[in-house]
Image 1 (cartoon, helix red, strand yellow):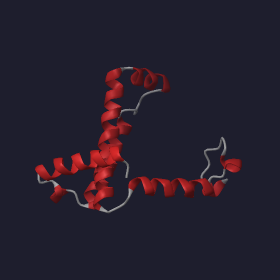
Image 2: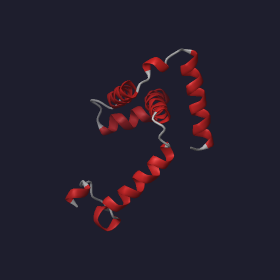
Image 3: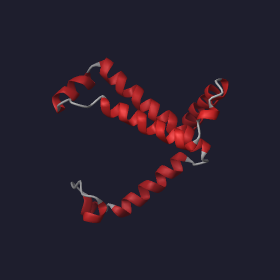
Image 4: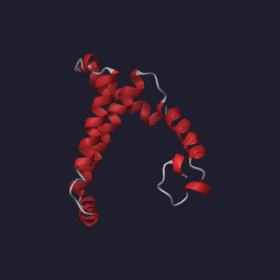
Length: 118
């Protein structure tokens, strides 16, 4: 990975081990946790207009809520990647390369269409 992510992962693994939480962190439950935390992130935006979101994000308390939800997602993602022996930065790099082929600039620029509709 990279040094900062490695250090964060090491801290997370110690945190988890000290609390004997490995028993709860199987791939299925970590994936569920990612989905649940993602839903909590969505909830921060639910029922807000674009203007309300802009105001909410300009407030430090609102932005802190968003930051915490993103961190929760990232924590579970790091743990799941570690447990499945997935090199997360390498997986992201591979996915970017695939997306570059699926969404060539000349077809995808300015379009929100899925690759099979370009």
